[in-house]
View 1 (cartoon, rainbow, N blue to C red):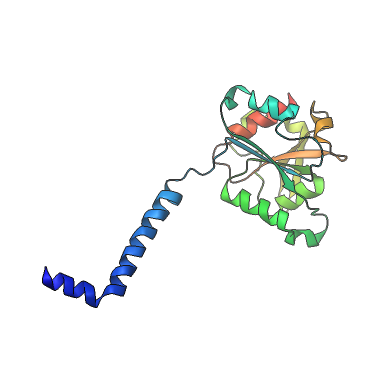
View 2: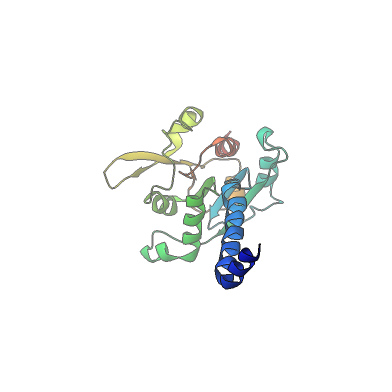
Length: 200
């Protein structure tokens, strides 16, 4: 026992470092490995939405009342303001925030006009609507699909037009608006339910 005490006294810094590393390891395990991928059942990102889509809106109320959404957290995030028809806006902090959220898997649906949907698609950030996660459930809207041409000249459907939606006026966009699904979606169930609500 005396030898152990002597060793600890001689190596106080090393012992302190071991203790700190142990607690850091516990912190990372509890906060990152065991943490769910996202807190919300549905997170919708609205680009340049200046109108009435908020927690008191008809769209939000109808979304929370969907059969699959009962008692689940729904997030409408309207804090994105950029225009990707302007190359400078790819450095815009709002755009960078959206990219981070998509890559982290914390946003499900992105709603915006053609230039922004096109710009987001450039990084492969919107799901190809022929993907097995969504193809069967969304094929009835194929006439509404918005197609993006990749650098390899492949033409893929990445979004759905919301023209004529019963929520079109409430969304408040002047130009045609589209809904795309984040490519990082593991389970697109909530995104599909929301798009069906918008269009059915």
